[in-house]
Image (cartoon, rainbow, N blue to C red; front, side, top):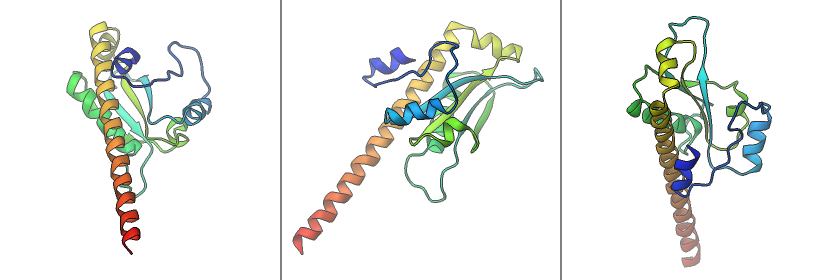
Length: 171
């Protein structure tokens, strides 16, 4: 996925690319210190029943009336993108206010659970290189859309400020 993002001139920082452990509180700290625009944590699920299957995206709940681009809105973009490209069961987006990486990041953040390692059908997909590429493309598309929405939001705020300054100058 990093290559796909870099091909679109999107700066990336991968906290890890292998199974090296990075502390839960270190992850949001790193993202915040980098002043990241978005934070995405990518996982595979597991459950004690092999019947559990599918793809879900987790988010920290937005404040009532929040019109800005939030982790919840980012999660919906991610889930929609994954569902458009992957043939997995849609477990939808889920509010998870207690997850450290979602709670303590200062930017819109989401956690994508691509599939269940404990489900035979999901596992077949997860180890398939074509499925992995489709997943990376879907996540890349969602990130691009999220960044576009953030840029539009910032431009709109700049225009509002200019309008207010112009009104003050006229007085």
